[in-house]
Image (cartoon, rainbow, N blue to C red):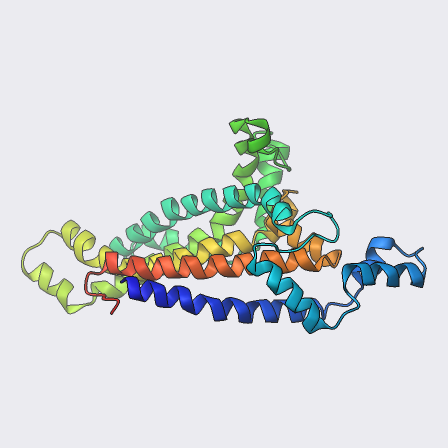
Length: 315
């Protein structure tokens, strides 16, 4: 087990290095000059060139990459061109919103998606199964921005139950009641992902239900509940847990639309703003951290397989 974990951690290094090269190269292919954007249209060519030299943008790409990478190895992701602050500080300032949205959305996905998926599989082809299948197909195909806008119209504008936008920081204010600002964004993010987990849980359980050992368990006289819980649900969990792991990373990285619709100060909006401002260090830092997070969660998901199925060995 420990040798497997060590090998997986070791394999992250070349993967992160490759990701950093790809990210750095593609970002610098984006049209536009950060120095020109910072100084505005009224700046003279001399002023723009002076700022480019001050920021090191006049040097060859491989030199810029080497300087940036050596800083990352030391834990220094550089300084934001727009905010004039360390990139890590800028990212941590926006992380609270994105982390809370991802965690609460993930809780909704698990609490809604897995039980309904189990119920659909147990009541296969019944009216209840058809109802859940229809609803899950609907929410899986609905655009996130459309769902968010309609939830905002219903619960914020018409019923006035919840705020429409923004999120005052809980860490700064200490007001846990501010969580009400995240209710609609979390539902918006959780709805389509819950629908996918419902479909996956249902199909996984139906596949396992056809296995010979399940038929043997029923032939031995085990109750239907015991067969469903001990043999079908447990063995179908591997694919569900794997999907949940990828979903969590996707929630962390893919909140751009939701944060834009609800005007939330999160990582997603920071990525969009940084791309528009050509804030290269911030974009590079965010994407590299997300890539690292993706690899860590992927490792944790793989390790959880041994807990779910004792037959799996990491030798």
